[in-house]
Length: 481
Image 1 (cartoon, rainbow, N blue to C red):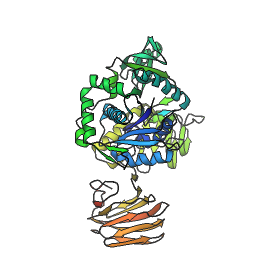
Image 2 (cartoon, one colour; image 1 turned 45 degrees about the vertical axis):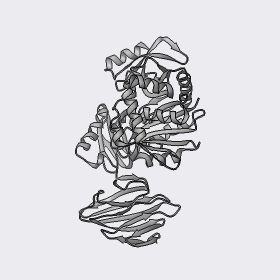
Image 3 (cartoon, rainbow, N blue to C red; image 1 turned 135 degrees about the vertical axis):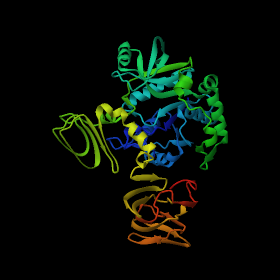
Image 4 (cartoon, helix red, strand yellow; image 1 turned 60 degrees about the horizontal axis):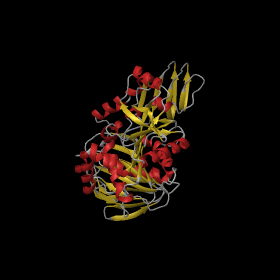
């Protein structure tokens, strides 16, 4: 049986602000071990038996960032395919699109393993065993979900009720799915013994899945087909599908749980104890850090006096706590979060408010990732801004022009190829050039090491939207740099 892991990477993770932001969402956050959730998910999927291909469904703005992470993690040389969404449309659209793509290439008998990009699984051996059981059931025509054996009465997860009287090979038939309960109900579920946390992972035989979607969610399936027909592919081997925005907007915005799993009579569950966590809050993140002798969990250089049961994440600078307890303190280069542990689930309200105010802190970090590399804003004031720009080997910024600002470029390390108006030339380390407002210009790294330079901007307006593109190798002629 051909198994294609499908990684869904669409959530922002607002409850993990200020580290998780729209342009740097939860899957890309580094955990205390230095690795991010997306890389862990990718490597876990590649390590499964007989897996040679990974299909990822993600936002088009995160494609190059995702590709960079995969290239670093792809030790098994798995084939990489992508479906790029113009905007989020929930999991039913994502799963249906992936299934149609897999069916076209591999046929009805192929199976897809749907995985969230931002979940942590500590026991990969048991995960592999659970997937093998799910594949058997999927081959028998079941839509398979993975139920996590509950460790405590959690109110932040949905639950799956298993029918203990209808045991299957490696699992159970599912009686029903239950929304997030209150605490008393969650306690009853744990005591009952046949309720499991809903992990949001699934295994489907493609032909059976599409047949049942036709029955239970025909509009989702038909409009997903129309979207694919109107979409385009890129890369010479058609490994990247760019979904058409106008067509995709017509696909109903709903979850695969509601569209199919809660309606079908063919749903089975594989119970598992795999060290699973959705890392849904800073409290969950803190569990990955060892406690000291007074229950503080500390990341970075942190000094505490008469303080206990705190979680502090301050990797860039010294943090000091005096006489406090039960706090979450998250320090980043441009934002600081201080919250009581009991309010961890409400951190997302901060991100929501920042978005309402159109504040950049809901969207971007001080260091911003682009297809060609990164830029970091070091300082800015009236009529000036200073950036550190890093360009990957072989990468190039767009051929562009600014109406309101001039730029002074100084090469710190590496070599730069510069187009400045009608001139084309190279700059070595410690050399510089000046780009006047209104001049077409382009920066390229022709070398084999990273190009690092300092850019000093000056002018009446220094916003990122003061840019006119003429050419771009990443297809962003109408987008912001």
